[in-house]
Image (cartoon, rainbow, N blue to C red; front, side, top):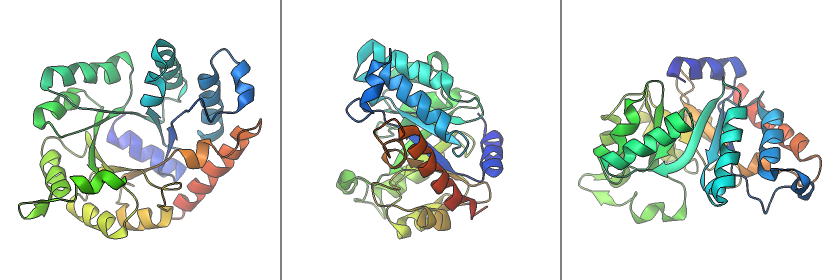
Length: 266
């Protein structure tokens, strides 16, 4: 999916919601264990319930890889089930030397045809650039995360700037706002403002809303640009609203509430 298609979907739905499919077998409703593939049954119901309110789905590959071949098969079925006009993200956080990254890119752009994949930039340009060679595909590069350990490296001084600032400035030069997004955590207003000032055109994938303490107004008021320019990811705050037969209905209500908050900014 290219940028204009993504922007069109955002404007049509008046939403920047990304639903995270972090499907945990220990949290899905017990009645689904009678299904042939309980994880897929859960994902299918969540997608059906939320697709009118979301512009993206983020599949956290770790939750599927943990189950070996069956998990990968479930991931493939889930990806295929997502409507084609909704942006797809493989949250895989790959990044390695060039020839290895080339294979990761083939995995998530060809074998499993996602629109984007999250990438760790620690190993430098040759670990990211293979992901930028695919037309209408995106590398979503880790920039400033909201986990406690982010301070260990990202917030350390690096010359006359912080390390995360150097990463953002450097990586932005490897591609364009048409093929690079950045992961930017949602928990601090000042940082959101600062990063948007640094990168006025790029899209940000923003986790940390809901269970991690971030909120829609703070994110939208400090990061939206003329194209929307953000994807606000909510995982637990939508998909685990219920654990009975009404779980999908509760997920739909949560997704609709987030979308309605976002709609006020369009």
